[in-house]
Image (cartoon, rainbow, N blue to C red; front, side):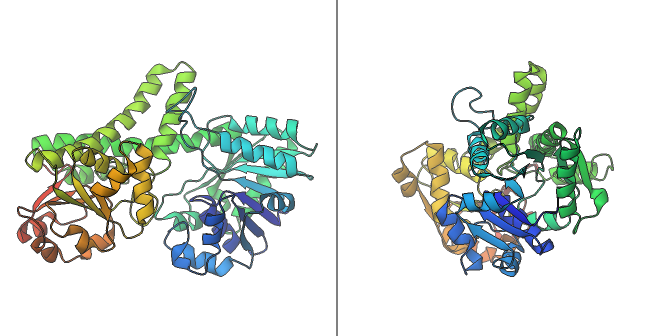
Length: 466
């Protein structure tokens, strides 16, 4: 099928950048991104390209180039579904907070709602592409809904998981390691649907890097990839605690093992912990799948990755309390960074949230600065935990627009995101404006320890053998 119209349901961190790049690389295809969130669509359509809902380096330039040409953002979901030959589903699949599988299984209610809406609207054959991260065999559920509640048209279901790292999403889309497409390889119709998506990607990606599999392999590959990556983070973080006890330096250990070609150097930076929308959610999903098949040892193995990550966050906040003479009540602590990693405004599962919550429980006073995260998002993150009254959060935590203001008169600075700009600050000026002794807790290894100690700071970094 020669695809001329694409619809993407979901204008978030995956749908927005992915469709923008497809529009850029395939100018002959009309791409429409739809969402029921009117404020989000209005932001995508805004002429203030610095205020797009998703911050990714290079994204604003692509949206500016393609929007109104062959990239469109709309709240008219039915119209976009009706016009499209290929429909991407890119909606949220959070961990369930209720019922069976609570705390582990993926909540598929938004996926089901999308499938039912597609079935209701579609009057011609469609290709439906899973872009959201989903449990294995979700495609069969989508197919059942489409076939049994639709208008008698034919649907082909494809799995096309994203392998994006936030902060480098545009580069990951333009120059991916691989593109994975799963489909019904047993039928001619399924093979044709797979080929339709292959032809879109090969407009700019070498065909050798476009892998085709059956549906179930594609769905499981996404969960497996995230589980392996998160496992590496938790593994090096586990070693960081041993380094601190023995006087070893985790950076030196990481470099030594990373030079082994069998291991490699990526995802071996010790830190306060991993965050983001995928790692924890996908591992918990994998744990739930394993348990549902009675594979308890497999489930326990992967669950330990999450346990280690939570331990690292708690250990970081505990170290702050211990270092500040076993009490932070009434003491001022600056947080530099709230996003879960640099070059994104995404805060989902950010370690900063848990560390802040722990310190606020100890009645610390926190001031936060992040270059891209807005005040409303920070308070919403704390309120989601439901640990305290929202007003108490606003009393104990303040959000600053300037890093020097955030650090003024504080007892300690905690670095929770590895923003490069933090290296450029006048740290002598920050030191001069702080309470003495002045502490830095570098949870991301951003700063130079020797320089900080020369200025006068007492400097702590995870895994540095302090």
